[in-house]
Image: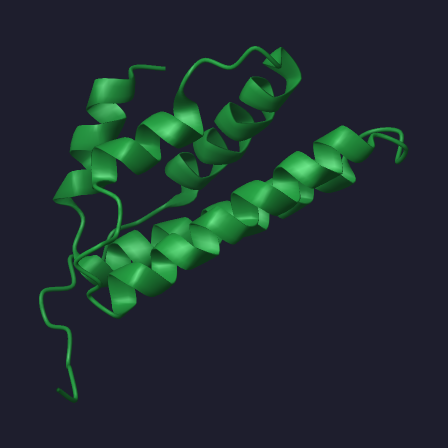
Length: 114
């Protein structure tokens, strides 16, 4: 998987589409957590941590938080090489499933009450 092309793809999405993508990814990571023998506490902790980070990132996008991580930082965190190859494979599988089923609606308007 080419991380730079994934960064470019994600950066080109509108705000709402980014959040839609992140939300789907949270669901896929949760599905990945269910796979296995059920006794792998490290895998469950990893999935929980990733979902918390993704949920926070989605919230930061919607609230237009200036302190949110840059898109490239998030994609590198999700898809970068890891010492735990099972965790790396888990994230890549979840990301790939979202990517294959994702359709951008090219949202251009975000209504803000500010």
